[in-house]
Length: 169
Length: 165
Image: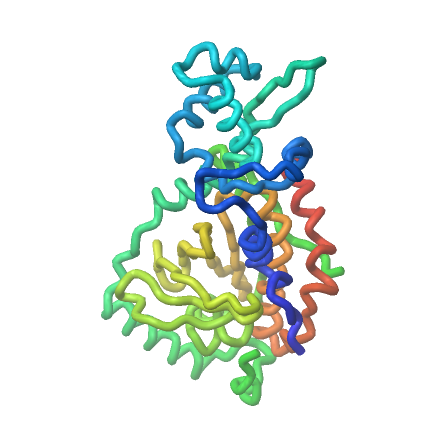
């Protein structure tokens, strides 16, 4: 019996398959589809890879400012040498990545940093920081192999039968 | 539904998924079950390559068409500690296995560091599934009795995501 017949229902890479199946504008520059404009309001669907969102220095600067406090577009545009439409364009991409959220207050839209969207980046960088190969020497493996053989011969796990050896799936 | 067993711990600002299993078996046996290709094939998958290079290619049994990924060996101290980094698609997973032995029982502690809530809803049930298969394989039960879609996912996803509140 195969528990997982379809790709995408696999125990560990399901999320990954879903992620890869997500349609998103590729490559950058990002084009925002009009029919997607409400998606980001749910804060649920990410159309833009968070790593791509962070790749641009202007967007990082916007995030740094939003980390201090929520802002309006006009506030964000006031302190930088780019046009307000340009800021809006970057904000749209950040919205689609999930890195920021927007709420309407009257006619104004308030942008805020959503730190949970950054978790995959933190996780990735943390993994990268500690991942280096262990000094596994040939001798250590030989010793291990000997140990495993000895164990296999002398001390089978409980209730483990010889006829199970063939089973692989 | 199969009762979920994992817990989400907070360590250094990161969420760590931790699962444990106990086997009435010598620690060397459990070590072999998590490192030897023949034994791994019974419950999770197989690896090929040269571990002395620092990494192997690991492929799991039930991940659809997924071709497998590079598994880097960060710590290998038989028969107590095996820490690996699994490159899964565009993610890197820090997986830490620790074995301890007392009074005839080997305790296997599995941890995945830096999980996000989205990951946990999938990998929580996923690791429960694979570790239950490990126990089956080591106790003479049939791992094939485990049904991921019927008993694990999505049935136990909420159990894991709820721990992030």
